[in-house]
Length: 226
Image 1 (cartoon, helix red, strand yellow):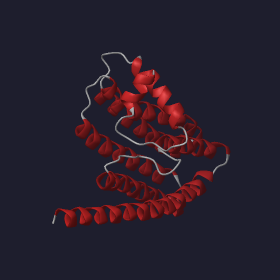
Image 2 (cartoon, rainbow, N blue to C red):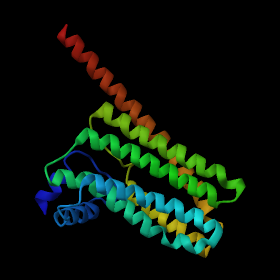
Image 3 (cartoon, one colour):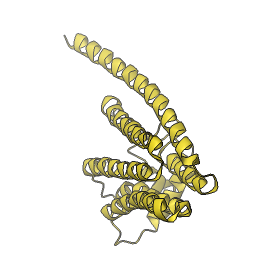
Image 4 (cartoon, helix red, strand yellow):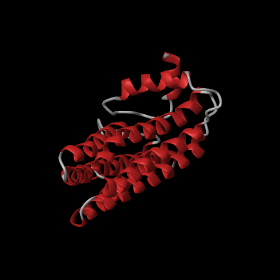
């Protein structure tokens, strides 16, 4: 198990609060994944999970909010595919680092847009802008993570103690709360958007500081070479 953990975590730095438990679970799963399952299949499965979340929200507008109680299943499907696709490739010693990196980012973005559209379809007209703001801010955090990778050469998908897994759990709980407390998803969506906004500001400032440090280091290297 320890060797598996090392193999599947070699290309990224994680700071999320559930990191240790999640890494152990992923290691357990990749060791038992059937040979016929490929990384691309898992990527597609992860996208289907996010699309299912969007479909459930759209159907809930017609058949009722009880359908939102199934969103945790959809988020789990997304976690399973999205978390295991690249890790499986590293475990099998067949990584496609840059291909997988590009595919994963685009697929994640499509999934987030789909969830945003589902939210837009479900909530009352006065709250629809919150869905738009959520997609924009989540996309901004994705951009920050890619820029941070470029500047620091360290890939991190987390923002402090929160990572995609924690966000999935929070969203699943919030969507379920809509059934028990009608209208709560609208307010929670606003709160999440506010948190994302301040998280973006904080991450952007840290990114600029890291970029400034790299510029200073580059100037010193140039001066030393001259």
